[in-house]
Amino acid sequence: MSYDFHVGQKVVCIDDRFKHVSIDQGIRKGEIYTLRWVGEYTHYIDGTFFGVKLEELHRGNDDGPEGYGAADMPFRATRFRPLVKDKISSLRKLLAPTPDAPAEPKVKVKKKEEV
Image (tube, rainbow, N blue to C red):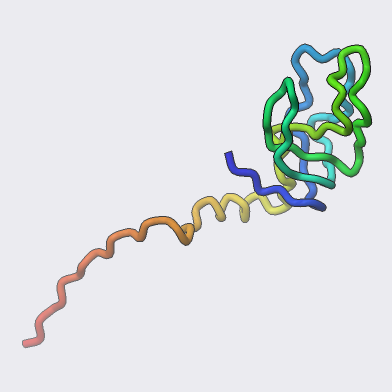
């Protein structure tokens, strides 16, 4: 999956459910956040994932009874999507040809012969 995130970008939370976690993680579905860090993160239990840290929320040390000892662990980027102000414009971008896409064959048109 490709992520188009950058520091300072506004994102909206699309998934605030955490399986097997009873401690509130602080994010809320539908809320808007600002990214302060983006990148690959490796956790000894959760493995390697693309993560984001939020300006509005510092997670602190994860050293509680269910914690894993991580300091300010990022959220998985899959929990967020970029905030889009002009939804139609963003959909048009999906239809636009990309530079590395193969060119479509041109249709040859028969020329009319002049008499």
